[in-house]
Image (cartoon, rainbow, N blue to C red):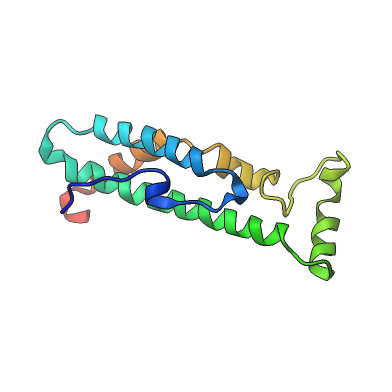
Length: 138
């Protein structure tokens, strides 16, 4: 019907291994406000809400995937996989510098995209792209 919008866990429940369930809901709210700020009439709603849906579905899917990976890593049975994980995490456990970690909470690359994400900018960028593409490209 295109007459209902759901946010947060109702739209994309998270497994707990990145601790991002509530953060996704906050991002949803900020992203929705940004999307709606680009609507000047009711006729604009399908376009801006379509952008909101695409951007948020991608982001939530990426976070869910990261959380599933972290959950797998944290629950290895004792044995070779667990030992390799522990060895790879040793520098951070010892307080030494490290460039990467299987622990996605502390891995610098994961931290950047997971915790440095700007939901408002993501929506604004995609709305600019959709405006440049015109209605036929949506």
